[in-house]
Image 1 (cartoon, helix red, strand yellow):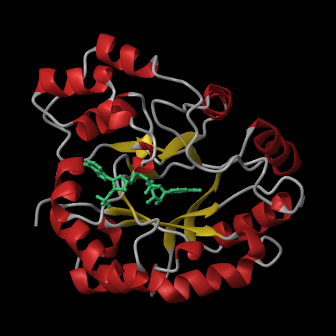
Image 2 (cartoon, protein in one colour):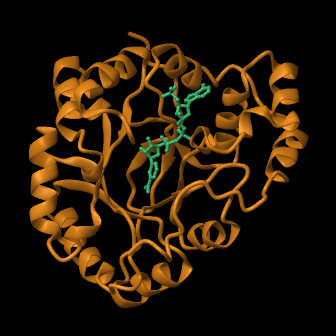
Image 3 (cartoon, helix red, strand yellow):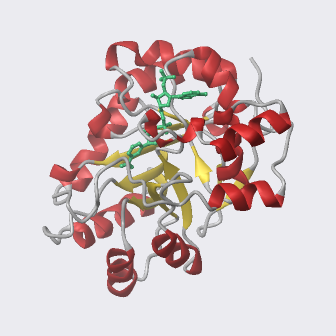
Length: 276
Ligand SMILES: NC(=O)c1ccc[n+]([C@@H]2O[C@H](COP(=O)([O-])OP(=O)(O)OC[C@H]3O[C@@H](n4cnc5c(N)ncnc54)[C@H](OP(=O)(O)O)[C@@H]3O)[C@@H](O)[C@H]2O)c1
């Protein structure tokens, strides 16, 4: 097994998070144990799952079978939308499926602004954090108005906001607000989910050629050098290794700037205001 030197970022509650991990959205539950085992063998130690992915059991089986000490692993899961008024029970179910005593990070998956239950859910997550069964708590897909409301009504600042973020869709307003308040940004869909043709853009292929790396490695490096936490997903072991092999080169400031200039409101996922 290899364990590359993935940097950690400091969170606002004093804990740290590996900046690069492995995401399991759309990883088939039947294949999850094999795929997460591959990811751990390749060297990932940070796994991002969610109750709605239906694969927490497989993630937990792979973690248990790996023999890797729990304190070397970083595990995130998320509260699904239909459980915002029932978060304590939903959390227990996730922990049970994962076969863990605690998760490192528990997130509210979507704000569902029309339902107005996310503050109630956030207060429940605070209690879970107080119990020590989630070392940190955060949010996902929150826009500025929802972050403002959580901060105003509870005073407990999420450690992260996990949002769709890649060079074609950088959400500058929510990213700036989050950072001003000490909330780290996690980029979901960091490669554009394969839906946005990021890896073919000349700015990215030129940087890849200049460094002798692949377009995906350039995009992951852009996330890291921009200070984002990132966990690309792949079912293929060779791509898992490729996506982790990003610590032997550095993009120049000009390359980072030219990739940042690719912003084009190229959303590939749902609009958080419309998920209800
Ligand atoms: N909070 C949220 O609402 C939310 C939403 C979506 C995702 N997420 C999280 O973010 C993680 C990452 O996002 P994502 O899975 O949606 O999308 P992603 O990581 O941007 O893209 C995954 C796609 O890229 C392909 N791929 C992976 N590595 C590649 C490489 N080196 N070269 C070319 N193609 C490559 C994969 O195909 P193969 O599998 O065939 O390699 C897959 O089709 C998720 O797994 C999940 O943990 C969170």
